[in-house]
Length: 420
Image (tube, rainbow, N blue to C red; front, side):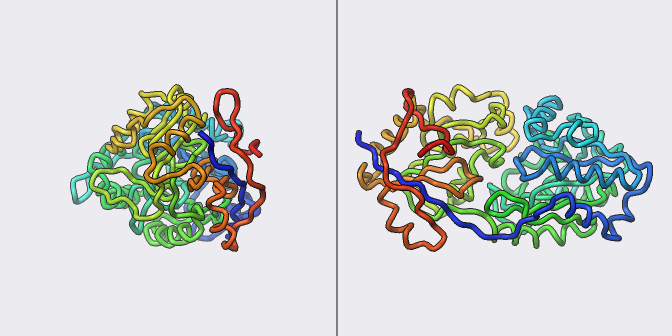
């Protein structure tokens, strides 16, 4: 089959950026309300999640430094629900892959899956906290505030999620996820409020990123202000969120999926698919066939979200750690996201199959787009059929000339940044 020529294009995003992470955190910790919360001799637990957050290791290290300046003793606790195979040693490995190590951050990592039950919400949801964090003198939450991949609300993914599902380990993740999307949308914030009432959390460090996956905002928020401030930072995050320039495609080709790009492997807000029972699928974007080619090393075999695609490759299939993926998906209850799509022997085979199986799709006119992952959307490859639309967009720069798709001897594309 003759495949369409493709062209490299670049999206130009705009948005704020924090030029010096350490200086910004120092300024935030110098606020009077924050200084009053940390006293000499206190043992302070600092949360570290599993997401691929920009500058996360630097941010944690800078936080460790600020805690030490005030005479307190910081340590790091993994706070990532069921990730890392729902095992303490697995979660330490996840942190290592993100650059969060004891030597770099200057503080020990103390990991456990044990929890302490603190209370129950008015709806009867049990409230748990990591046992090691509970026995500290105070907790500092750190997380990126962004749109969730499963639902929309005034509180989505951020500090309150970190306080509940993150800090409550696997047991809290189960208690919330077993109630489906309602558990996330309605019960998760209530669990977080109970955690805040316990007095164990001192503050949260809310992070917002721009479309380049750069740190756009860092704000240290006293615990009593988190519930009020987080929704405001979510609004900012959604304004800065990167999207693809075309809403309707025949084929969206994703080079890599992974937990470091999105909790759902591929960000549902980018690909326009949710695949959760009783949840309505977005009208736009609308991509007829989605191909995912590979799994990131940082995912350690956890291919949660592969069910969002229609086709994949044997390369990705062979990297799946079923135990890790199944544990994650069983916890979330979103079983469709673990469904294995059709497996093809190569990228070329997957593209040819997508064209053959598409409705009214002709190779020479196919609306095709290739992206590296759903987090980095600055540089893309598109088929010639899309060029006239993109040329009319001020935010798009055509930086290449039409050329045939090139594959290696096994039928796979070169790495994205090496492709012509």
